Amino acid sequence: MSKWQAVRARVDGWQKQMAWSAPLLGRITVGWLFAVAGWGKVHHLGDVTQFFVQLGIPAPGLNAAVVGYSELICGALLLVGALSRASTVPLMVSMVVALLTAKRAEIHGLSDLFAQVETTYLVILVAILVHGPGIVSLDHLACKRLSRTASADRDAQLPPMVSRTMDPSA
Image 1 (cartoon, rainbow, N blue to C red):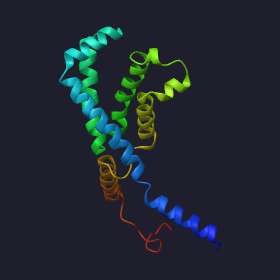
Image 2: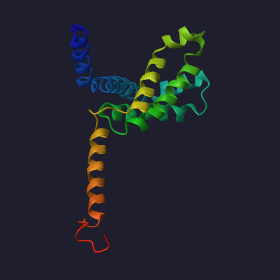
Image 3: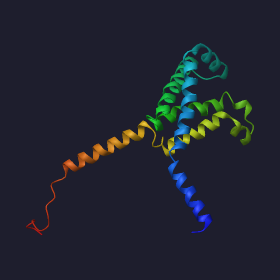
Image 4: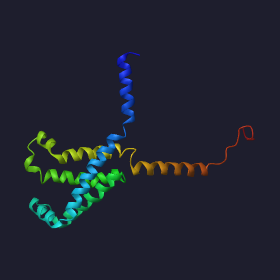
């Protein structure tokens, strides 16, 4: 094995060992940011409502509460990796609305769009939606447990195996 192949094999091995870290870091980052932002909105609903009035968002009081609580709850769920894919949807909607309303005046092209932190959050949320929360999550633990339970249930429903030599119809 050449030196280059040895280095590549080592890097590939390290990459496989660390594959769990990217979804965890992305999930914790946006989970924390949304949970904290949601906490602030929930505790200052009047201010958020007034801001939504200025933006021309319909039903500003209702939408302020929906956004605040969805950011708080979905952010907390992302932190622990529970219902992660479902939690990304309301947060993505919030980011799209933020880009179309609060940030609209700042966006004159793709460079401006990609410079917005909301776009970064949106990209991370899409990655979580598409790839899942990773193995360091409650979702992963629940799936493992459900798959074990389903396997055991399936095995319990199977008829006992009969050997071919004992089967008279064979």
